[in-house]
Image (cartoon, rainbow, N blue to C red; front, side, top):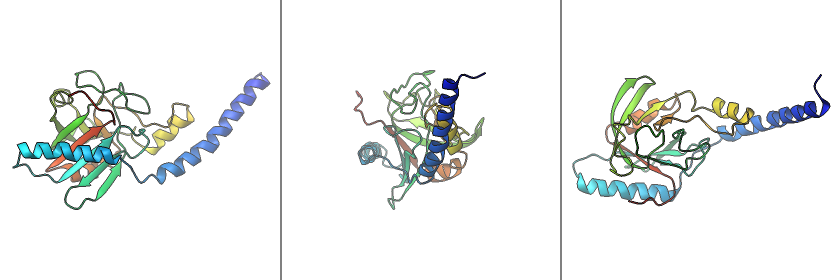
Length: 213
């Protein structure tokens, strides 16, 4: 027979989950997306320096990933550089970069960490995860190994509200899943991401802390 103290503790935990999950669901559904304006300014500055060296490249779209935000938030802003309009989505970080927050970053193969800096979006292709976008790292120190590491944009089921709620209910924290370093979005967002970032798109990942250059 279950001890009264243990039974009461389990009932209390279940009651807490029943309260937290609907509240969390309501907040997640209302998330409009947000990235730090400092991240946007730094991203545009880096893109401007790249444009000076490559004047023939078309600059259409810039995605800014704000890793200072927790993973349950829509922390990737896809910015139309002509109109200034923004579209937001959730994006996963590398499994060895952190749990809820990405705190560690690497350019080393097999590190399973996210990388910082400016990336050029390459060709779309169909891979193990379906539609995906190849990336070229444009910062030799911070992300120059992106192509050899096979760092791409793809989708996965673990970037979803049900996954966040499951982690919350199982006391894993309100986070999405984590990647091997790729920029992973939800199944429903990969199409719009590919449409917006293809043909002249760039990604800038930022964590809010100055990195040695």
